[in-house]
Amino acid sequence: MKTLISPSLLSANFINLKSEIEMINQSEADWLHLDIMDGVFVPNISFGFPVMEAINKYSMKPLDVHLMIVHPEKYIHQVAKVGAMMMNVHYEACTHLHRTIQEIHGAGMKAGVTLNPATPISVLEDIIMDVDMVLLMSVNPGFGGQKFIENTMKKIRQLHDLILRSGSHALIEVDGGVQAETAPRLVKAGVDVLVSGSFIFKSADPLSTISILKNLPR
Ligand code: DX5
Ligand code: ZN
Image 1 (tube, rainbow, N blue to C red):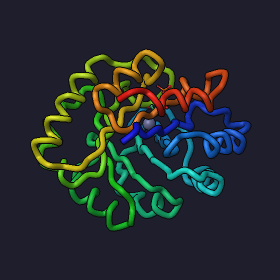
Image 2: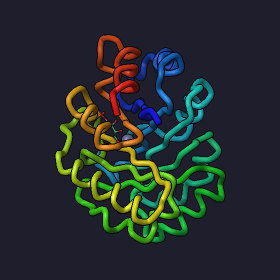
Image 3: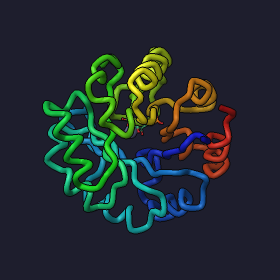
Image 4: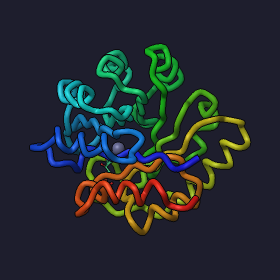
């Protein structure tokens, strides 16, 4: 399988959102990554449901929604309603993670669990069979353009072991600081989905940047 590419719209030019989405539509990207922040779980606020709904009208790519909010379980039906394909919730924000994962599936979406950089892989032991994806944060969530945290490479190896050992079919997605130097290493390490924001949207030719990420040797 080729690497799946999920450009993070957080680094797009919001004045020209329509043309940014059209660019993604024409690109080799597989998904569109949407970062929702509440100013409580993370020290930043991004955009919410009315904007997501508008994005979904133009996007031809499935929406990979990353909720950096407290109580994500309150919004499952709203996330489904705006047309999300994948709903990623943070392990650190879910008291009843198993129930939340079941409810996301019940609403017709794929379910992802997200880990902050300081959260160990071992917490996934009893949920790995139930999730479609694990999203490893390789920066502290809240902002685009941060430096990749190197310890993520070790977590990818540990997550691979857990997936093999358990027989889970979960995909591994990495988010934060994915750029020219880190992306080839992540692909070689067996990451299934790359999220990339500033590297794509701030590049001179985003279409070819996406193509380069998509075609990195595995
Ligand atoms: C950060 C977000 C990321 C962000 C990545 O909290 O979850 O998706 O947009 O940005 P880059 O690729 O610039 O590190
Ligand atoms: Zn994200």
